[in-house]
Image (cartoon, rainbow, N blue to C red; front, side, top):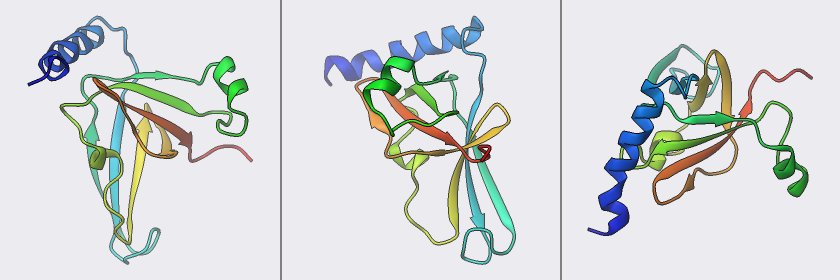
Length: 136
């Protein structure tokens, strides 16, 4: 095993400690919704929820980042980081492309969709999320 692999459980324990101390107050749930009609919005929806534990860090994109990448971020976007890489895989956030299946991220009570692909770093996954119910 590499040093990075050896340190992942220690990093995850630190994340759990941050949650236990109340430093990460926002919950993030990954909801995989399957529609019985074979198309999104067709038929009856069946949901499978996965609460991300320990709670990841959730922030709005900083103004500096928005200015450096015009058009990449929109009002209401969130950056979710510090997601335990050993606990979750990329398929947790982007299941295979199956007709009638969608992935929704619940941050507190608001619904979001992932923008782009999850970012894979040594100790964590990072996501860019966009609100589904944005005002027009």
